[in-house]
Figure (cartoon, rainbow, N blue to C red):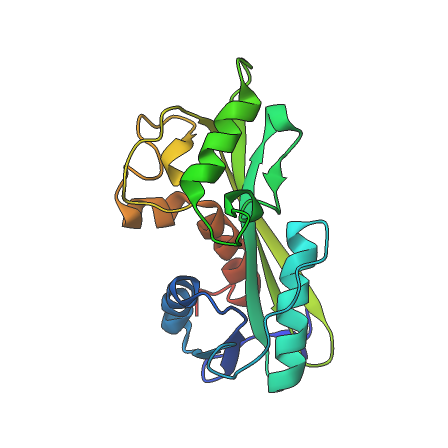
Length: 207
């Protein structure tokens, strides 16, 4: 990794997302390292079409245009859930499974579809995946991928999470991601795993 592509305290970085919750979470993770952040929405950057076929590919689609447009490094996130008995579906289409015919998202609808498609399958294994992409204005990019393994439960349990959290139970846990304390979830999640790899690469000395 060259000095040119290393983050340093005092630098500004674009959080390449229009999701306010995701921006807040990433901003909080970056602040201790002396980085100032601005979101893609604050810069009025367009929302890119996610046309790739992998989490890493879609993360790059978000980060690279933001880095070039803002002329500063950009960090993006693409994530979803893979269910093994469904050949990895919904995967990158996790949000699409929640959409109705009018384009409105209802994750109860998505969870019901998972339950229906699994049927009586004994394999309930699943994992959440997160790909973080750090991109630079010259087109250089690095992807850090993290995951967390568990299984699908039914019926949904808990109201402290979002998305597929109420039906995902991590290996070794007795509660779903929607039942545990949000701070605990953030410390063990797929995003936490990806961020740990990102921070170890960019801030090996912890600063």
